[in-house]
Amino acid sequence: MIIKIINKTLWIASFLAAIVILVWANIERANSFSSDIQVKMLKTDYPSLISQESIQTHILETMPTMLGQSVRNINLSKIENEICQNAQLIDVRTFVGIDGLIHIKVKPRKASLRIFDIKGKNLYLADGLVLMDNSLDYTQRIMVASGDIPHLNKEEKLQVLKGERELPQIYKSLYELAEAIHKDAFLEALIDQIYVNKNGQVELTPKLGVKNIEFGDINDIDKKLKNLKAFYVNGKDRIDWQKYKSINIKYDNQIVCSKK
Image (tube, rainbow, N blue to C red):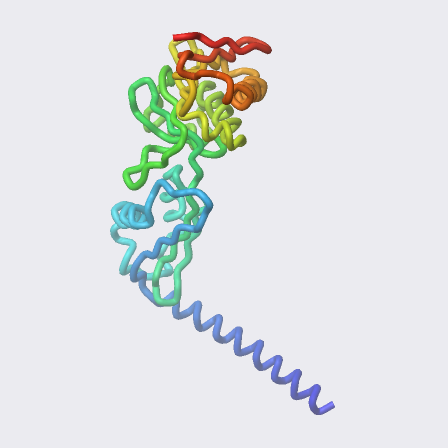
């Protein structure tokens, strides 16, 4: 009986001590001043387009008076909203340590396709049909799409990000095509570039074999890619690729090869 009372007393004492420590920590943090920013990029199985240093520099330039002020006056939501303006990042989280250090944890978005629009400007199309500006820090070596692709200015891209503007259909179609190619390791290794001509017809540039592949409209994607893969796999040992300049897969249930 005595042992039970002692154990219960110790448990209550530990619980009260934890509450005291927590309250003390909150008081100390509230009375401290912001000292610095620490940005941490969460690990992913794909590369990031932006560096931790760039994020930190941007925050300090945008909110220069943030450091040195009382922690209780730090608006963490404002910091998160500012960082979320950069479409290259997702899942932004911030908190302040007892020492006044502002911790910022971010997760980069995964790029699916690099696009060069009709004006020659380039951007990335990420998972979830999100547009990401070209990075000053890194360049990802991924599939490229170019040609007759409409240009979006900074304001239009921001409107798309906020859901205030519809993304042009060609962007959606290119994303669908790129994702279908990414799902197949053979096709992903084969296809290097996507080109959209003025008639809205698509051409694929392979890394081996012929010079180009006439895909046609971005319809029946899975069927066309399945036929293309079968043609390459079945013909690798009996087709002299040097004799042909292009493959046409835009017609239903047939593949047409053009000689040089």
